[in-house]
Image (cartoon, rainbow over all chains, first blue to last red):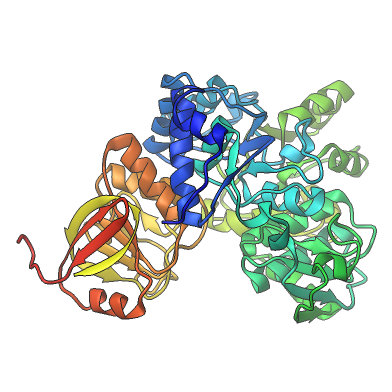
Length: 414
Length: 144
């Protein structure tokens, strides 16, 4: 086993000086550090936990072991989506056992002192990290956003280990916590973008192409339009982390560790593995749909990752005065939902028949009323997972396409 | 007798089952039956229960840790896992099951390709995995 150097804090944690829960967390972290070949630990400033989504009895047994030991998280810790919308529990149409266990799991995390954010977009909350912070985040889209768009530093933490980091305030010093591992090792150039693809759809086509080419490497992308928004980069990362295992990407001129190509590669020469032109990006865009344009649809789902307030700003003028023929779901976090309430937009949307889903997401739990046909989405990540999770077909489109389709009752381009 | 690196401690015996392609436990292992449920995997439909699973490396979502721990909890998992590359998802699932339920699914790192081939060719393995050293006995038959 690799030799791990423990400092005084690590020894105090292991010796239960910070309590039994922190000691158990540190023991797990030590084993994990051995498995990944780390040789020491670092302090982390915050954590994001992906353990509130129910995977079986072990999910509850794990977190309740720490509750029984009186555990409290040692750094500000946000929570990812759970199986339930605790604000609108009436939306859940699954079985009672999952309702009970899913709720119990979410509440147990609150008992440990975690912040009940229940969002996959913790970077859209007050707990957004700053450039250079060492953090322990789970949830693939949040990980890639933190590393790429913010320049905070996290590895792909996940089940169990995210909570161990939160309870100890420690992370193993390996991977993307270290500067040398954050340099791009492959280069992808966008030579030409299709005229008719808006930025949100373009970002997703690029993310899909990049993820499927690079696996878990750190890519640098050149040639993206310089007016891509933060939401576009969010969507790009989310699909790249679904079609591949991307934990970090650089976009020259757009992301903070890539002012130049040389900056992103830390001065090294890296291979150009692909150049993408307009026909190729159009082909990738079309490949995200499993049903043709023109298909009748039963619903539209937006907000995977969770819809931001800026996305609601874009949505409102598109939807005002429109009559929707099918269910329209928008997944978002509690913080953004509170802002909607302050603006009166939640009621306005409700009157138009829009279902706002909070604390969870339409593709991980049982909420959608109809699954007997085609669903339209503007989310690459939703398009990637929903056919498997829900057994439905999808048509993928830009936000404008999705609203036009909800009005038409069939998939159309705006 | 082969010496190897222990990642998670425990003792086990069983028949080796070598997968030609790494399997993501999340979406790949049906916990209730112990069978490979990923239709795209070459070993689709095979049972992993009570085998000594040999897989070059891990794969897929970190939710695989929960799936493995749940399979160990209900007794449908492999009795041990041999890897050629360290894998955090598998180690995490096995250590959580050991911690919560006292059920050990030892995980061992085999770095020598020659050792890997010798192990895979045996009908039955006894293994003992302690802090510091793992030993794999290729000569004792089933039940001995």
